[in-house]
Image 1: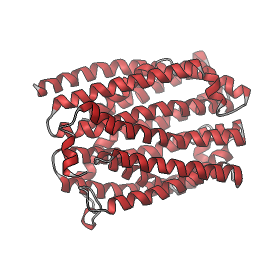
Image 2: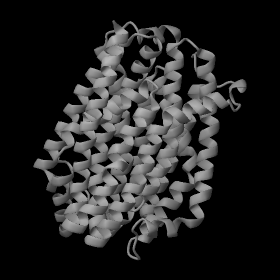
Image 3: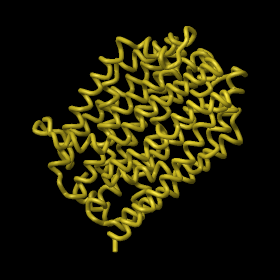
Image 4: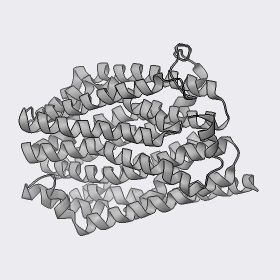
Length: 449
């Protein structure tokens, strides 16, 4: 980000700024979610219902990998935004160097600790003899390319937070286009099956990572690569981890939750119930990623203005982001409640699997309109560096409420109990978030006066 660009964050109209930052982020997040959607659709249509169930088994491990990626990427991106707001450009560049170092180390260690025990892990996640081969073939390749994935998402988050949201969007779109082309080629022409989908994902991210490295090699920006930034800085690492801990715990919790959900679905509905959840989760993921795009657009504006002590602008940004988030989830609710069969059949033509997915869709999405508010509000605390509150709100929805409900409700309601656990936890978490965010907003109002 150049100095002139950074000053725009404290001068330009908030609505214009949020559109400028959020829309590219939204497009990038939708494009990013297409990795999973494309894999599911191509695999389901080519290989059948059990392949979708096998792919669903990889969700926990993918979420856990993403958790470590967001720990570094989101923490580093937020820290850079706040640093630029304080005009501390040297600190921002050192954050970039530590993000690269941590991404390489964590990405490598994750692969080394999981790859030797891959089949055992997938069986623990709810796999069966019918689905384990699909899951193992897919995850083996994804894990081999894990270091590229961590660097790709970490560096792209920094491009966005340092004042180049459109460039970050272009890199993501480029990666998705390459992924689609390669997936079509590997699955339908070379007939590599589920391994072809994984190979397409890894290769597309590696090619896009090269582009990101070239971007940061240019010294005509405030944040760029230089030899002196690649050294461990204890304070920076602590700050990255403390800010990134909230999204890390959210993704790590999601890993554990999916394991519980898969286990319950296996017990009460079998392999196809896991496949149905895979479809539901993919669709929900699209809309959640749109909300995350809104929060990613909000984050640099809020972080910069909070660092610059322009608290009224922080509040204006938050209010607009909430309105957008609620609108997106209203659309999600309407789409799923009106067209669950059409959405399900995009992934599979298996009638039994479609019927299970329809029932799950109608329950899981019932309180979706309020989730936009909950996610945006949780990210407000993260964007202003209040990690503990953000962590608590993240854990409330994904751990404190959801896990007990998943354990208790199915014993009384069977498979319906698994579905109902999700919207009930969404509702209660939103109520708790409301009380906390009202208090925070009042504090910001007092500071603004």
